[in-house]
Image (tube, rainbow, N blue to C red; front, top):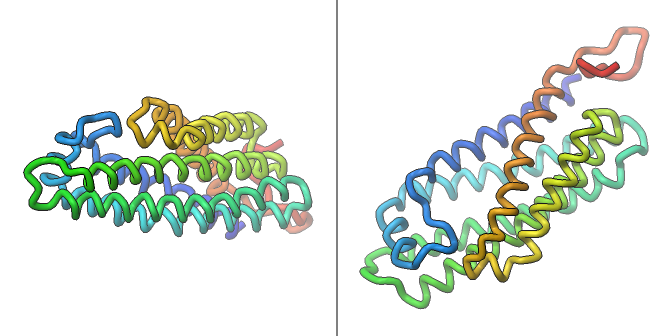
Length: 231
């Protein structure tokens, strides 16, 4: 029971961190299709906000790894069902973490390059485009994480069947954006396909997090943990 609640709490903590990160950047952050003058202006005027967002990314990475590792432990305890998906989620999460670290480092590179500039430079644009491409690749790995985790959780009885469909659909959307990372780097709106998948990932995290937090202790005569709402 404690393990289920710990994994659930980690999922909710990850959601909270992601929401705060996006709220912080809600004050006119540029998209990858915006002109470089707008990119320069935003990063020159909001260095503190971007620095905070990058710091939260450093928190998101261990939360993501902690969640998928904990989920793998829960799936393993329940038998062989879902183990393949769980292993995929762990491996993909490690890859996604590396991608998001690169994404964050390049983002700080944009901030540092924008300092004291009065007009965009080629260097600033290259770093910005690399930052966008890193986001696309990270989304692809996160999509595989989502699909594997959702499949494993459903197969092992930790979540309902519809949540598996949610994971496969949302993960697929993020994979589409990842495959089109080159286009994302050039400002293609295909990035919003991946962002939609990311939004579904957040919804799924809330659903599984709350479900695991509502775990009831098993009766003394039984061995399995009972999830509230499971027949």
